[in-house]
Length: 342
Image 1 (cartoon, one colour):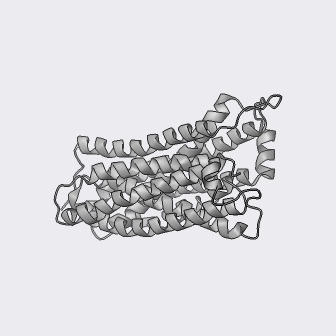
Image 2 (cartoon, rainbow, N blue to C red; image 1 turned 30 degrees about the vertical axis):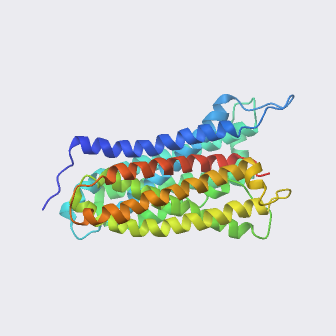
Image 3 (cartoon, rainbow, N blue to C red; image 1 turned 90 degrees about the vertical axis):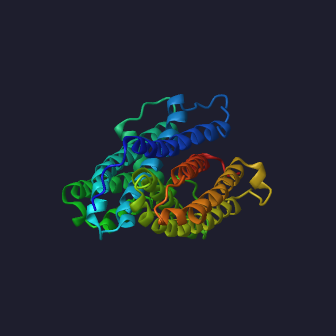
């Protein structure tokens, strides 16, 4: 049996869910960044509003784009390959969007480099020489450039998938997308300690787990939630993946967040959790992660049995609520990378 396109109203509903995630992320970034902004010091030039507001917004849009690429790449595996007459109509819509998201990821990464160069040189318009010097001497710039290169590679592979379909292995698309996430933790706080490498690994695990969980949910609710027959196949697979990702995100987030604070000179735990901007932001993100648990559990244990039977459910609404909280968590995460630890 061939699956026809979902009604326009259902497609709009799925797009709305993705929009809720993106808007929540941007709003949380702006609010958290405003609350934790450093006060101007007389005599020391400060970056202009374009940099102070634009940089965190572009940075979170980088995350949103990367999440989209990861999730859309995962969707092929979640759908499976044993019923192309049902899955191919969906993937024909997904593949071009993956390319678009990858281009957005690359552009945001490069624009972040420019804005961070401007942040380090307040009052000056970044020149190519200044940008090249920043990339050459600062690990953050190198990480962002590598991430942009991976995004461009994902776009190129995605274009091949648009033309040749699933002859281009889904595993390759997923690996390239996840590989592009690895440098992103470098753009945050660095710890000068023998524990630097373990904490960086935890951050990378955290970033990849969050991207797979969030991206997979976005792809599922946008492209599959309105198709009951496909949803009955995809959601159980995604639910198992999401459980693993939740454990990865929770454990790695606690280790990296508290570890960064514990290894920063002058920071004393547990008091700093409630007295420092960094600690309060970490606490906020932990709270948001905890809020995700009952939302995800409701979908898995209350709605999934009916979905398996092909019944109509409110899964789209619950998934949208989950994505809203995820968006807030992503916005807070960007603020964490810019907040003072001590």
